[in-house]
Image 1 (cartoon, rainbow, N blue to C red):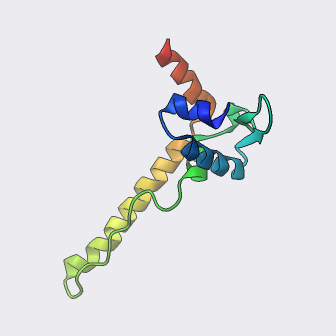
Image 2: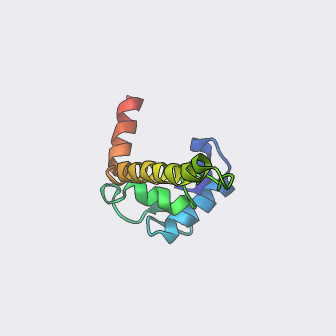
Length: 116
């Protein structure tokens, strides 16, 4: 499918879709075919692609911003930052684990059910 068709379907800009496709291609999830009838296609079956792979291909940085150090000299202020960092790390790990357990095939199946 061409980036223009994908963009039209998603209601976004073709340039944005091309940037996402480049990221997905670098991650080995898609490949492009040039010329007439060309476009982007999956590099492997949707059953073999997890949502975590897709997420990591297109997103950078941390999911949850780490809290900034707080005022020095206060026991509560000094203790809260590491506690919040630990909680953020646990939440992020749970999010990644949930994405890892879902394949693109499962998402496509759910989309078909919702569209019916």
